[in-house]
Image (cartoon, helix red, strand yellow):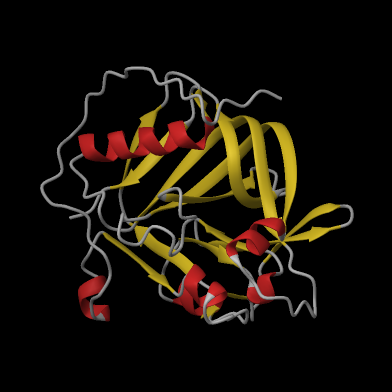
Length: 256
């Protein structure tokens, strides 16, 4: 499989974009205010809770997130045993098994250790005209597109992609039960079970981080945390790298 994640090939795209009248809104509002906003994004917990507080129990109840009409979200599952992905109002749990990845709709009591989540009533979309090679290129593209839409890239927002991953590397966290070793960033990386796939039609949900919060709900070396679920619901997990096929559609929230 062919990945060019660090050798970024960037094309110049001609965009005809509508200008938003205001920046992106992040939820710190009362319920009555939230209902009047076209989009609300927030996060609860973070990687520091795992590394510094050794918090492995799920503190974010998926049921509560969905009850508040949040249609998109992502985070590591309770006890670091799987990934939770919320897409279009449905929560999916991915667990690493000896036979591969087991994907199910989340149980009623499912929870995540931390989660970035939210919703948008309106989305602006852009169809890619070229393949995008690697997460670094995709991060650059999302940032450039958001700025062209006059979005505030210094705050959390969710984005989504619908398209084909020509090459895909993804992983599912799977910490061994009873593991009492000191948990660190390197241990967290090793605990991810890696998988690869080709030509996967999938839905992707991503959380964009501010520079200030980089490393809170994203890896420290990127402002993106992306999960995916295939259209046929057979594979899901944390996206580590991919080649995104031309013709894929990127959705950014339209907030006002």
